[in-house]
Image 1 (spheres, rainbow, N blue to C red):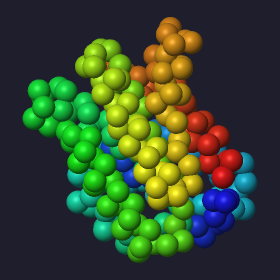
Image 2: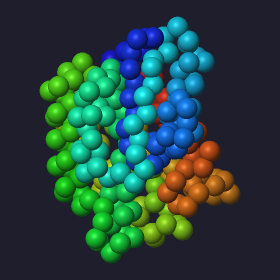
Image 3: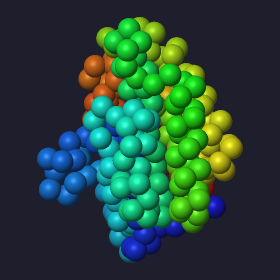
Length: 212
């Protein structure tokens, strides 16, 4: 199933600060991260069919925060392709605040499933791409990567259940990159990507969705 790219199609990215990447300070509203890299690649590779790209990332968001703005930021925008990347804050905030923040994995599954069901019902032609959360590595909380694997599993389960077009394997991409090139800074603080990290997200996203 090919993603429906043409000059009239709408490609919407939603997520947390990794997606946000300063979009409010950008006159184009795209930000400086992986969303811009993907948009510019699609424009440069084939300008005649490059889609209109929309960034709805919001710094600090969990799945619960996405749920609170889903109607306005997704349903009303009526995207042809929807890319979702969330989960880092659901884990990170809980670990950093001794369980008083974030979203437990059971709630994460329930809310995420509800959003996918809502999208399927209200936007039946929209193609959905689910992105794994990337990494929580030192100097961030040392238990981050073991905890986030549960959320990665949920996203892959939901992709199968809701017949999402594919899952973008960002967690394994970052873990492999950290293993093979530990001399490269892939994140600034164990969570937020560097420019190389954003390029890794963009490359992995494009390679995964190209196969659809």
